[in-house]
Image 1 (spheres, rainbow, N blue to C red):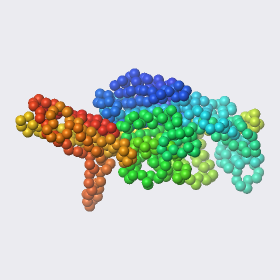
Image 2 (image 1 turned 90 degrees about the vertical axis):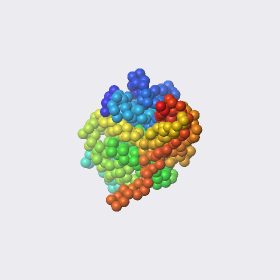
Image 3 (image 1 turned 30 degrees about the vertical axis):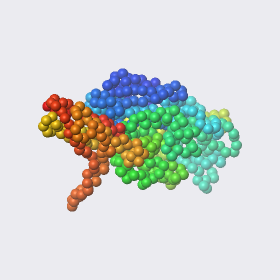
Image 4 (image 1 turned 135 degrees about the vertical axis):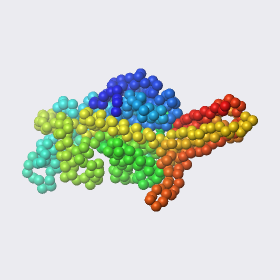
Length: 555
């Protein structure tokens, strides 16, 4: 894939903005850049629209939406969004990309949390979504880079009552102390940091200083008691801006929200099992998942089923759930990058609800072996450090932020390319209206019979999803004929919907062909009075499926 910029490091806010402004300057016939508002720290929340403006405006074509960095530390996601934008613009003259730009609109919010990402990229801290206090001051061991190496790692404290011991096979790792293990060197394990607040006989890791979670803040089955949910749905300016943007773009029918990590594609619904989902929508989601599997190697998982959720502990208020359940958009979450899978640990093994201590340690050993071979600098040996509160401790372990949570920079381009390949296939599922055979038949005495066939060439129906239809958000197809006196027929009419070929019900076997095709086309006729020469125009418009025009000249 040809790009203008390199994808071998993570762009901070200044560089991200510089890239977007460059694209705006270089590609005015394809791109519109705007700010959805400023964050509390004064950074712009950038949004981008991309299409070939020579073949229609942004709102005249069905659209795909891409975003990243809902969570501050998941910076691979923002780079994947930037990469797709880069490919579309840099390769606009490639025949395949050109056809996509002529047919579809692409919208992007590359970095939903610019404030949080800036903290993540420029300090040792890790945080969920944004660096705004949530709840009371944390008590316990507060994470801090004590040895000044720029990374917050593990801290082990020699303790005869400790629950951890050095693993015999891999001494860099710690295993849980055996029930009958009396003799040996044992440790208490904490995150690298300082003890804050009350001190008593129990030593605990403090909860996160910044606990807000944008992916629990959307108005879809929102639960106030869920950690990070906020005071009320969309009370964060960033999530409110995302919701307003999608509402203002009814032509968005498919969406990918880029997160990390785990190497999987998550699909709504999240608050309940997909067995309760409307069958057509479930079929389409699985078709999208099959594309992701082909291009990325990542399996499709329903969040509720795949993570063994219950009615009490499901993930509420998620952005992809809101996009699907409240707006009818086929939204999936791409959990980019999976170090463990590269180490030979399957997603199913990682998510095993009965994962025991022995299996956990086995998976850590395999992961560490992969790290040794591909990014050995990420691991720091246990190193003595004089702690002002605990005395002699040892600090060591993994740079979690850029091995597990995000790609090591050497793997970033590869991960971005996989995400872009998937996205450029997903967009092709959108409905695509075509006016076929718009023609005239003279009847004599200036009377003319006009006929046209309106067809949906897309996989998806013009109403996008059954969910959108149920929410009464799907707009009909409006048809307008102008340029002549209409004797029979209507100048303005509506077609409720045209199905996509996803709804084709024919079946094929060696013994039989049976079933029926989908209702993908509509025949229209008019009688007009049209003295020669007359040019009539036919416009077909649908909020979800775009706008098309055709002319017929009567000579």
